[in-house]
Every structure is written in C-alpha cells, then in structure tokens.
Length: 167
Image (cartoon, rainbow, N blue to C red):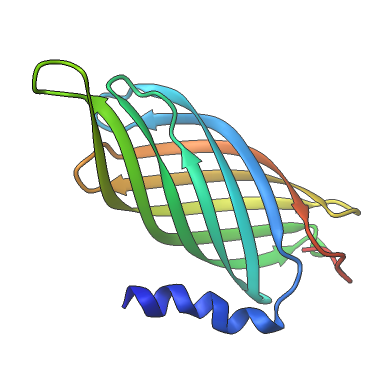
C-alpha cells in the first residue's frame, strides 16, 4: 500500500508544472504537557492536478523538554483557489517518519528513538504577481510512541518555474 501511495505523485507528475519550494518558521505546542518550542520546515510541493498536489517536507520540531524531534513527511494535498487565484486554501495528510533524541532512562545520557506518525495540515497561500508566495500553515502530528504536537508556521515560497496564472 505504501509503495502505491508513494508512486502516485511520480506517475501523475508528467502533466504538472510550477513546483514550489518553501521555508517555514513558527511555534509548536506539545499536547501532553503543553510545552512549546520553535519549529521550522523546508518543503517541496509538486502539483498533480488543478486541485491536487503532493509534497515532501523536512520538519524540525525544536526542543520540547526531553525531546529533539525532527523527520520527513510526504503529504497529498487537496486545494481550491479563490480571489482571482491569488489565495489558495488547502488540506493535506500523510505519513511522518520521525527521529527523536530523548533523555535515556537507563543511567543518563541520550537515546535515539525512531517511529512513524501521521501529519495533517491546513494551509492558506497568497500568490504575488511574481513567483514568490506567502503561506500560513497549521500542522497536527500524531506520533505513535512519542508526543503529539500542534504547530502554527508562517512561510515564504518560490515557484521554481514561470507560470501562466497565479495559484
């Protein structure tokens, strides 16, 4: 099933253009203790169709006490364009592979925990008259064997190819 999920963007990408590269920064809140931390992400997004896209992200969830977690995510996005295609509203979901450096329970030191989770996102992107875009993103991560988190990030992106219309 995972192979099919990962192959779909490659199969459908031949007809898509206007890939985007974005950098995000913001804040994260851990669900259990309500601790917070800075968060940042780097994302490559590729449209598959007018209202469907796929993305690959590297997400650094900062330094929640006792954890230094980051990882990769692949998401499938559904989106709609409004305001003469200047504003794009999107929802995304996909797997999250994390790497978490934690305090070791066996005599101090550190332990490296790895695991899987799910990331769900809501995004609003504003497309300028050039290739630049601005984005607000909310991520919710449910990680099996680790903490769950919510993050609000702001980002700036760049369309890697010239496009005929915004959005």
